[in-house]
Every structure is written in structure tokens, then in C-alpha cells.
Amino acid sequence: MSMMIAGLLLFTGTHLFLPLASDCVEGLRRRFGPLVVKAGVSILSLAGLTLIVLGWKSTQPQWLYLPPTGLRHFATTLIVVAIYLFVVAQRPSRIKRVLRHPQLTGVLLWAIGHLMLNGDSRSLLLFGVLALWAVLEIMLLNARDGAWVRAEAPPLATDVFTAVVAVAVVAGLIWAHPWFTGMAVLPG
Image (cartoon, rainbow, N blue to C red; front, side, top):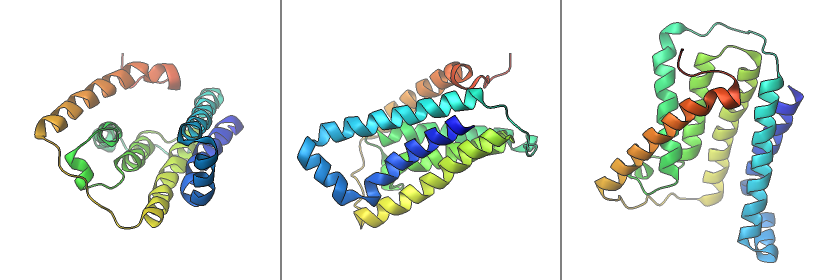
């Protein structure tokens, strides 16, 4: 589990550094250029994610609670909505007129959905930490960035295309889920 903890610290710490030390980050951007800083954040994030996945796969879970079976469909719906929000965060969307941070909101919903589906120690650690990080990150970004200026609404066709992309991403994640977690999403 220590590998997963190290990955969580690296991933969340890298992301929390950006709003907490914005003057330092801006100095790094001036000195090395924005692409170098972005590449550094990407490399550290990828290293953190790699440690999380390897730590997950190498940790023997201990059952802490029995997930309520009656919430399975609701939890799965939360995860699908979360994936849609991940996709929305990268594209123009009407959702951005309602949610200031769609990707972080997606992380929060994704984590809550997984906590409703999994009652083991490694799930509680991973999804609990990521849910707390998402809330903290939203608060820090809001404090740093000040008043929210809502984006213009794109044409409806843009949102329809985004939904189609999200469906493809969901299908890809269902297919890949056993590879990086060792657990199939769909039975059989």
C-alpha cells in the first residue's frame, strides 16, 4: 500500500502545488517557459498515476464495509457522469456555464461512485483521498482565481459531439478497466 500512498502524494501534491505556490509557478514559467512547466507537471502526474496503479495491483485489500447493492446503478451512473465531465473539461460545453470546474467535479463524483461500489481498504484510501483532494483543489482554485466568468454557450452540436466522445471514452474504460485494476466492470 505504500506505493499507492506515494503515488497519491506525488499526484495530489503536484496538483496542489500549482494553486498554493502560484508565484513560484509563475517564476518557473518565466524562467523555463510554460511548456517546460506543463511537461514537468505532466511527468510528475504520470509518475504518480503509475505508482497508484502499481500500488493498487500489489495491495491485498481488506474488507471494511459491505457496499449497498441497492446503490449499484446509482453509483455506476455517477461514474458515467464523471467521465462525461472529464471529457467536457477539455472541450467547449454548456455545462461550463453551470460548473466552474467540471473535471474536478468529475473526480469527486467518480470517487464517490467507486466508494459506493467498493468497501475495501485500498478503495477507501484511493477514492477517499482523491475525493478530498478534488474538494480542496476546487476551493484553492476558486480562492486563487477570484470571480468566475462564465464561458459563452457553444452550439448544441458541440455538446452532442462531446456526449458521443464521452460514450466512446466510457466504452474504452470499460474495456481497459480489468487491465489497470484487475477487476472487470461488466460480469462475464
